[in-house]
Structures are given as C-alpha cells and as structure tokens.
Image 1 (cartoon, rainbow, N blue to C red):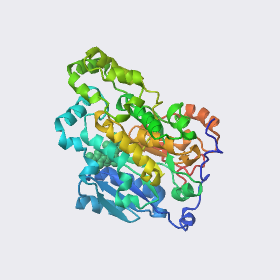
Image 2: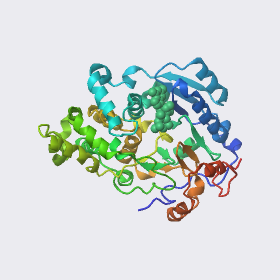
Image 3: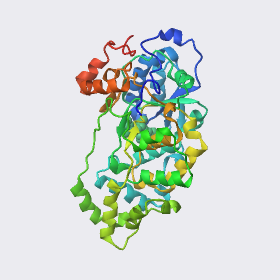
Image 4: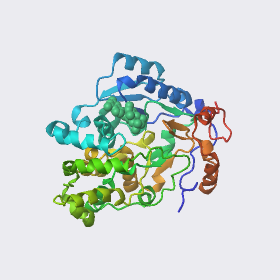
Length: 414
Ligand code: GDP
Ligand code: MN
C-alpha cells in the first residue's frame, strides 16, 4: 500500500485568507524551542521566518527551554519578534544530565569520548547526548509544555518558505492527526546500532500490538521517504575506527547489554556481545552491530514536528522511554530523538494519524523540503515522478524558493 490522497491529503489546497482563518478559536498549542543563550541570533532568525509565513496572523505563543537561565538579552530579543506571548522555562539537572555523568564520570566520559574516535556524528559531545535524551524523554513533561494539546517544534536557524494560511493545529485536530512531519530521512547507522534491538525487546516484553504505521515507519522501505531528502553525512572512517577499537577494548564494557530483557534479544548477537574473554569475539560483535539491525533507519526529521503532546505523555511512551533509558543507549550509543519519536509513532499510531506536511516549505542546514519538489495536488506516484526532476538543494535554488508560488500550495503566495 502506498500513501495516497485518501490516507493523507493536504489539509488545504491553495491559499485561504489567513485573516479569516484566524477568526477561528486558537487551539491549545505553542511553538517549543530548546536553545542556548548563545544561539539567540539563530532563534530570532527562525522566529522571523515563521512569524512572517504563519504566526503574524495566528499569534501562537512561543515557549523557550534551556538548561541554563535565559539571559536578559535573549528574552528581550525573542520578545521583540514574537507576535504571541513568550514563556521561558529552565530544565533542571535530572532531566538534563545523565546520572552516570556524576556517579560514574570515568565510564561516562569514556563511553562518550570514544564515539569521536569511531566517527559517530556528534558522538563525543556530551551536551548533544543530553539534548537527544531530553527531546526523547522529558520535553513534553515540562510544565510549560505539558499543559498543551499540540506543539510545533522549532530550532535555531531554520527557514520556512511557504505561507501557511490555515491553522495546522486545528486541521490536525479535525483530521485526527497526532504526528506531523515535513522531512523523512535515514538515520546514520552507527548512531543507533542497538536501538532497534531494544525496541523489539520492548515490543515483546510489553506485548505491543503493532498498528499499520509500524511497517511503514520502521520495517519497510519508507514510503514517506525521498520527496526531497538528502542523506548528508556518512563519514565513517572504518580503518581508523577498527584500529582505535582494538586499542580501546576496555571501552567495550560499554557494550555489555545489561538489561533484564536481554534474553528477548537476538540470542546469536548476544552471545558474541558478552564474550569478553575473546577479543576477536568482541570485535565481531561490535561489527555485527552495524549490520545486525533490521531497522530500515527511516525516521521523521524531528527538528520540525507538529504533534500532540499526549503521544509522549502516554503511559506506553513512558514505558518505552524508561526501557530505553535503562539500556544506557543514550550515552553508550548516540541515539537521536528523531528515530525514537519515529519508532514510537510506528508503534503507537495508525498510519492515518500521521500527517505529511508536504505543503510546508522548510529547510535546516543542508536538508530541506519544498512543495515544488512534490506537488501536493498529485497522488503519490505522480509526486514520485516529479521529485526526480526537482530534486535540488543548492543555495541558488533555495534563494528562488522564497519567490512567489507556482503550484498553489500556498507557496509564497503572500
Ligand atoms: P542538529 O540540528 O542535530 O545539528 O542539533 P542542534 O545543535 O541544532 O541541537 C538541536 C536543538 O537543541 C537546537 O534547538 C539547539 O539549540 C538545542 N540544543 C542543543 N544542545 C543544547 C544545549 O546544550 N543546551 C541547550 N539549551 N540547547 C541545546
Ligand atoms: Mn539544529
């Protein structure tokens, strides 16, 4: 089965009059931005873009979260560009730092630093691990976020290219959508070597009945994938990696999978993993991680998300997060929140609850989505044909992407 307009159509074709749309009551929703004080320029830039293309009419609140106090300057500058209320929240240490950072600093440091040697993107940056874990397990429980029904995640230095002339929160509610995305890509395999194993163990342990979204999100080749996305980094200096690995065998303590549910995990790979008497076995086990997973690695790129908070505040998601947390994979590996959110969407939602915002032009760093790439009026197969023609992400293209509409997706029409 393919995604087609019956299962997931654009909410609105062409432009509406946003001033008329804005007469509808606001949903219980807000933008959520985790950022550092030093990122204020990037934050302001993202805000300006989203205010211009959407929020100038709808005036939704902006919620800012930080693991430190926001500076006076940060607060002042974001307040200046927001058309809605602004709120600031601090994330306290247990939700930010790993307990191992304090209780077992040598182990923690080794586990994280060695990931640099293994060329795992951002792997040797502890704060990045903190951030991914925070977005996986905690942001939705922050008091400012918890009381919302929907949130729209925004990051510093993102750009929006199309006017959004309707309220996406309202449309999600009307259409019973719980998770919305604009870009789906493949995860870097060496950041999540065991994530899927743990996820499968969780599914068995908790007897999760997988809905139809699962096969699309996790196991099959993802039909959402490829409208426009580009797999931008796969720097794996294998030779260097294996050399370092041999020098650092003690670090392979980190690979001891200690969870009580390990017997549920593929016994064959497990045998190799726990064979610490045998260096060869360890290396084979480590190598095995790179091809042992049947996760197709597809995930929704979570720096853009419009979703319901109760997808994550649910008991089942809490159990999933706790299960993952207990495996230590958030620092022993470098699990991103994107594959975790996506696997959760795959486990807990029906396909009809997931929405592809193909009408929202969006770009962050080297990846973007432009409705021109995937004309939203067309059925999926047609879009597939078009994407081959329009696949392009160079700067010149994006400069033009901010120009007036051609295909009526609300593209720059105002
Ligand atoms: P990337 O997009 O994957 O390269 O990751 P980013 O560096 O953009 O981080 C993702 C989000 O988390 C951004 O909104 C950052 O501002 C935020 N972030 C990352 N690390 C930290 C941190 O240590 N403190 C705070 N407050 N925010 C962070
Ligand atoms: Mn970013």
